[in-house]
Image 1 (tube, rainbow, N blue to C red):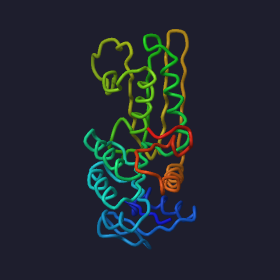
Image 2 (cartoon, rainbow, N blue to C red; image 1 turned 90 degrees about the vertical axis):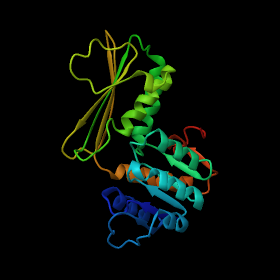
Image 3 (cartoon, rainbow, N blue to C red; image 1 turned 60 degrees about the vertical axis):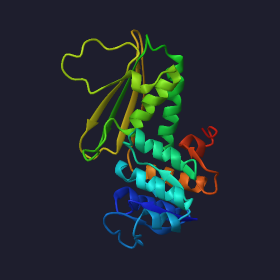
Length: 254
């Protein structure tokens, strides 16, 4: 299988290349703003998509529209791990999924995927008027979006379990005299500092008990390994928008 890597010169790009080779795949090259030592650099994403069976993409939200169009035109499968996409960019990803096979996930760690599945079940089981849901995340100081894509995914899982839209119940960025906490709100707190790879804690706090589920990533390789696993899974799949639960065999296509 031929894999192309968008963002191949970055830290994640280099790990993705290493994991792809370790899995027995061929890395045809990549695209980036700067050359990657030892890698074939393509002129643009369209050329890379035309040469690869699967493009693995951990770049920036600003590239989503162009990358979605390129993979859809080439019929190349796409494993997308970029976070911070707005509604228009997510719509472009969904549109690409109608023409080719796309795996889109905010986090490719199996542990986080399972945590999100538990979040949905807990959201359904614990009444929103009794259990306050809060999500705390911490990442390295260079991260540009907040809350993290993983934190938002956990919030969406809780909201889905409760039968509400996350956008209607989000409580993020508290400051000043905010008043009492809204019943049913899903709160977010984003911490930034040092070189923390990624830490997420989901808390359900009630009057008489508290439940906390946490995940801590020690090495970005966990995400790279999961993404390459997704690349191996998605090749040859029919057009569709898939998630990591599909890759792990825990659900059917949405």
